[in-house]
Structure formats: structure tokens, C-alpha cells
Image (cartoon, rainbow over the protein chains, first blue to last red):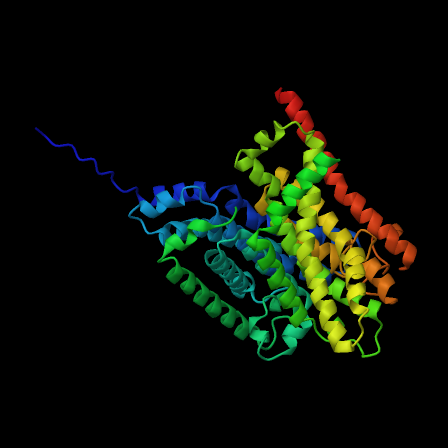
Length: 239
Length: 264
């Protein structure tokens, strides 16, 4: 008698990505474009209020360099913390770091596409005030990687949405308020998130972008290491 | 009244035990106290008056500490619905309005407690540092006049808005609003900064310290909300913030009541 195999074939990669995109929810796809739309709306408001062309250009750039990373980081915390069946996920042969990576990948893809379309839109309409168009990803990618990686790290370490989002929000706000002080010190300048929109693309800009990217990737590596023990995530306090 | 107090007390006891509430306050208050910069209250001259010093501390904590409270309260009602306890609570012999008001008062009291403690710590530090025992009293007054109305305002919106736009989206918008509506200079962009409805407590802090705290009354958008800082405008600001904080509760109560009637 032929024996039936009860092994379920592993799903194909595109199927897994589709599944994780659905698990990530609408917020993962909407957060980044919504942040950029808010920036565009604020620029429109400033324009109606009599702001100058340079001021509007800076505001549009701020959307890319400040609002986008904030939206991505806050959404990333939710993606890490919100998993109604984490125990089940941990019981599967697929490593949880990969599952979470795919979910965060959906968010990163949506953010990157939105930022590229937004940058192209600003370039085509003559509102781009940032660096050379080829270097435009350096406006948004380094602060986004850095802030999102920090947010995920805090969410994994603290297992609390409140603590992680409060810390990210506090840091973002402090960087905005104390911009002059942070730019004024040699040791804080490379870590300042909003150099393009608050200082410009002059001396030290590229160093700042490289330092942010490298330290951001370091934070990603720490998260990957921590996720080798995913059971640490099992007792988060709330969504 | 006893029902309202009972719900409020229960909510307070539940919220005040949240580890994240204390951790978030500790992180935010410590960071802003350490990195306050040369314009911060720690660097005020030795002959600065107690109200000036403690108004400075209240405003300083008011810059970032309410962010944590917004994050804490954002999932409060949403969580009741997600866990299925909302219908259970609605089945109790208490009017839904009282239930919501009790949750608001209890949540506000619980989130205000760490802020009060932060102010008392700052008051204690200044008492030792400046040798003025009145600092502690002004710390309590500074908390009540500068911080508490802003917290009441934040609590009203943080409790109810996530019901409509979800907790994660509220948290992102809240941070953006906090910067735009409290600290973005009015000459850069039309904003609510420096108006009577600025929850950071700009008007009360300016009144207590006797000089312009941040942007209170600075010319800008909605000029009718930007009177000269003083005792009257500070009182008006406190009243407006408390009333505006109640507005989303009234709207949420009306909408939820209609939904319940529709479902019945």
C-alpha cells in the first residue's frame, strides 16, 4: 500500500513575501507615502502662508530626511511587537529572524519606492534642493536605516511598544530642538540625523551619511544577533 | 459620583503599575534634564527666583515627557476592544459616559504621577543647589499650572483618536504634531506654536517666570490666539487646554453611543 506523506511542501519565496506583506498590514505600505504626503501638504501650507522658495524647498527635503525615517521607525516597532501568533511562528522550522526580516523588508521596500518617487517628483518639478540627484538616496536612506534599526533594537530589547516609540520620538524631537548644539560638537556632528535639511551638503555631509549608515547597519547586526533567541520577544507588554 | 471615582481609581491603579509608563518617563526626563543646553533652568543665574526656576523645569519636562504619555494612552481604549473587554465593561450597570470619564480621569492621574515626581525631584535638586526651600512648593505649582493642563489635553486625544486612526498611526502623527504645534517657530511655518492652545504650557510658564518662556504671543498664524502673556492669558490657556482635551471625549462618547444604539 502506498504511503502518504504528510509533509507540507515549503511555500515558494514569492508566496512567503506575499504572506508577510499581508501580515505586516496596511500600515507598512501606507506609513512612508503618508509621511511624504504630510510634508508636501505642509509645504503647500507654508507656500500659502507666504514662505519663500528656499524655505519651501527645505521643508520638502525635511519630509524626506526627517518625517520618512520617523514614520518608518514607528511602524517598524509595531511590526516587531504585533504578532498574535508568535508562539506558533517560533515552532516553525523557518527562523523567526527571517520572518521578521521579510515583514520589515516590505516596510523598507515601500519606504524606498516612496522616497524615490518623491525625490523624482521634486527633481522634475524643480523643487529639489538636496545634493546631486544620483546622491539623493543618501538624504533619506542613512537616517531611515539608523532610526528604524534603533527602534527595532529597542522593541526587541524592551519588549514594549511604549518604551520603544517614546525613546524614538524623544530622540527625534531632541535632535530637532538641539540641532544647533548637536552640529556644534565634533563628536555629535557625524551622528546628527538631519544634516541635509538643517545644515546642508557642505563639508562633513558625506562623512555624516557614511557614519549613520555604518552605525545603522551595526544596529541591524545587533538585532539579528538578538533574534537568534527569539523567545525573548514572547512577553511584550502591549501592542 | 462614587461610580466615576470607582472607575477612575481602578483605571489609575491599572495604569500606574505599567512598567512602560515609568520607563518612558525616566528615559525622556533624564535625557532632557541632562542635555538641556545653556538656556535650561539648571544654568539660570544664582539669583533667579523660585517661580522662574521651577517654571523653567516644568517647561523643560513639558517638551518631551508628554510624548511618553501619548504613547502610553494611545492603546488604552483600542486594547479594550482588541481583548474583548470593552463589551464586557459596557454590560456593567454604569453609564458609558461615566465609564469613559472614569478612564480618562484615572489614566490622566496615573500618567501625571511620574511627571509630578520628576518635578519634585527637580525641586529637591534646586532646593539643595540654590538653598531655597520654597523650590518644592513652586515645583508643585509649576506642575499644576504648566504641565497638568497639557497632559489633560494630550490624554483626551490620545485616548480617543486611536479608535479612529489606529494606535500606530496616532503615535506617528502625535510626534509630528508635537513638534509642529509646540516648537516650530511660527515664522517658519503656520503653526499653533506660541498660541493659547499650545499644550507645552508656554503661557503659564511665561506668567510664572515673568518673561517670555518660548514663543507665547509671538506674532503668527491665528493672531487672536496670541494675546500678550500674563496672568489672564495664562488662566485662559489653562482653561482652553482642559476644555479642548474634553472635546474628543465628548465626540467619542457620542459616536460610540450612536453605534451601540444602531447595533441594538
